[in-house]
Amino acid sequence: MKIPVLQFRIDGGECEGALTELEAESPQELVKIKSQMAPAAVAIRSDDLHALRQLRDVTIDRGRKHRAKQLSKLLLGCSKIPLIDGGFTSAGQCMRSIRTLLGNASRMRDRNVYVIGLTQKLFDEIGKQTDVAAPIPVSVTPTISSRTPAQQRPADGDNAVFARTLLDLLHSAKVPSELETRYVGRSAQAQLVRALIMHAAASGDPVLITGDTGTGKEVVAKCIHEQSWRKSSPFTPVNCGAIPSGLLEPMLFGHQKIFTGADRVRAGLWRDTQEGTIFLDEIGDLEPRHQVKILRALQEKKVLMLGSSVETDVSARVVVATNRDLFSLVQAGLFREDLYYRLRGFMIRTPTLRECPEDIPLIAAALWKRVTKDETAALPEEILQEMQHHRWPGNSRDLNSVLSALHSLFGKGNLRVEQLRAVMALQGRAAPQTAGTGTAAVDMHRAECLRHLKRVDEVIQAGRVAARALLEEKLVNRPAELAFRDRLAELDSLCRHPLLFQSEVTFSVVHRLQGKLAYFHSLLPGGTKAAARYWKRDVVEDLKLATSTIFQEVGRLMNP
Image: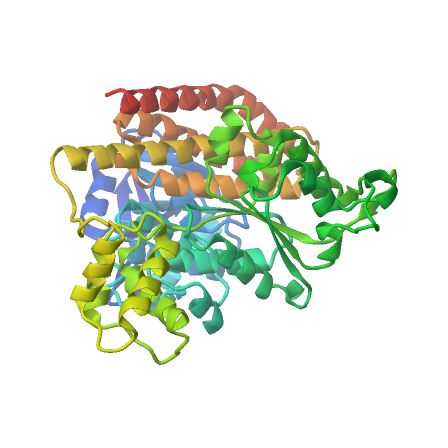
């Protein structure tokens, strides 16, 4: 059975359409389009979608598009050819969405065919426009990147690809120039951090910043504060790991002198911050009793002073950071699950220098100006290149230590690479490292797979918690729906790297779950009743299977 279709593709920077026919019962027809035209969009009548849905070997059903969802978020990154009922109401809206989809697909090098169902009326209207054969301009949404196309090639590894994927999915606010000088880097990961800073600044939700030591977590927290409307109010940093356990609560929440024997009443840092931002660093070091108090303060926006029986309202924005794996701490029972998911609603991960070697010269140049206290000071190119080949386990903090020693020993002028090597040798640092082969390369890939699977498991569990909050309500809870949508976008991005699942079976199980979660999300506009039925009937077992499969895969990776 042949069905009429509209094919759209990018040619010379323009989106061109053609009216043709497709053999609905032949998967080879779709595969042929994919091999010859990809990326391409194929618009068909919604009534004809059921025929293509039967071709399960080559297609994946993405359900019905939610009016607030972009086609790019739903269709890009699929291993099979995605099918979706577009739900469009106007030709202009439909064509704008297709242009954006193909523009994003070309930029992300996603070579696939995207099948979109339209009403009969809309299909006929767009078909008449297509017959005119007038090219439709492609409007590619600009990203915040200032890098050239050659620099944007996926050369930074899977983390860079993941960062670029999220960048394309985000509706990124314009990044001011001062932020680019505060959080330095041209890599995709650095660009993503700056984009997330702007999103976090526009939100009032708690923010969780994760990353290794020396990756600039406090810098990110300060930038969020400075880019928000709270910038005229205090920014209060609190190192939870450095304050004695008995003093943390009175320092944060305040105390009455009658109760504590102190010379006067103290309001506490949380109240002193007023409308500003309180930054709780090393949140993973909190004792359980303190975790309870912070969770209550976040939920109720009230604090209770030691020695008082009356709670006081607080309005400070909360940003937290840790270099520990909070998800593992939750699984080990050392960190409260409810507090973790309360904090994880908006998460920013700061990358290591190991992941972004191209950022090392920029960061080193910025640190050198601070070390020398001279805005015109510059490091020779040979020194910057040498730094790219060294390991920096302490990241920017480590880099700053070497630059301070270099300045102390040799000043800031006429520097040579031999002097840098002398400083490195004095500090007992290893020689520059190059990429390994053989066993080392296998071990590195295994470690990447372990990190990736841990992130996948974490996102699935976070999605489960968000879904549970949705299913407990008769009407759709908007904050819970947004949280679930964000987890779905994260899982979608993670599924774009099938090699990091280690085995095809594990990837297939997670990818199938991702499709079902997307369909569950598409049911929410109609209310939670139908969505709850679908969750119980079709999602629960796949959720359990995905969790157990990941657990088994992690076990095989850790015990090869």
